[in-house]
Length: 398
Image (cartoon, one colour):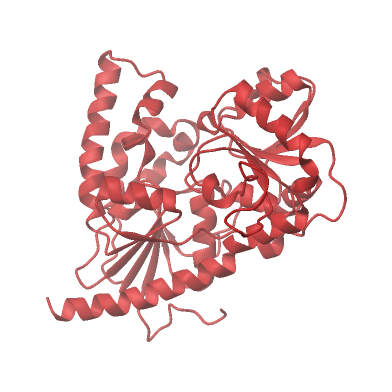
């Protein structure tokens, strides 16, 4: 796809995301979208070249008035929560024919002209406004004092804004069936599922026997439940390597025993090597999709995952009983644990160890290939082109 979709005589395309301050799933998705539209400018609320490892430095990037809080946002983003909805509406997208937003919180709320087609690739309706509101309040120790009442009032106002702004989108794509259901529940909008891009072709499959360590690749934040994995590996004296950075790193290091190793952020090449060498990948949080378990399977390694969210759509567990599934022999690629508890995770690790030879690198790789970047780009290009044509026809009849 060498030819730009954002050519001089074609429709003018703009890309929108929430924050470009660190690399997560939404930012990796945006980087892939940039391959389809290399000349399209990027609009975001705050940009940090260092935090995104220079991946977007060759793109024209427009920020909002919140850019002045760049350093503050890195350290205490929750203190800016009252400014986000207004900031995203600052973007001037009036000269574009097509707007594509990679949204996990506010990017879907941009304002476009009636003749502009807005396709939103939705990673999730904003979690702390909807199904994770109580968890958000608990994790941030927000009670019912004056501070608690103030925060709840902000969340209430944002919830109203979030629902109303969803009607500004002309077409939603959901990053998983899990998210499609939430878009329907909270936004009352239909959407199609297009799984996010995973760099499967860039990840070499393991050819050697695994090492003896388990692996986590993640932002080190409370909701990722890395503390649960550390607790279990401490109890079982299992080796665990943790790749990533985040606000919880110091707290996690403080509870870690001698078998736990933190290696910080790593290059893709080094991270892929960790995947190939690990015994299994552990994914303890509930994610909307979860790219890292797919990356681990691409490297040929099985996954131990919390049985909620997007992992249910990517990881294949063993059948409940011996035999196959509906006449089709499908080899497993991982194990689920049902409860976010040490006991449940320990049982999953023991089950994986007991049946380790049933998880083959080739089957793990085969499953991962369903979620390749190439499949994503093909699906997105079709959705944009067809959606834009249909939208133009619709507007002719208005």
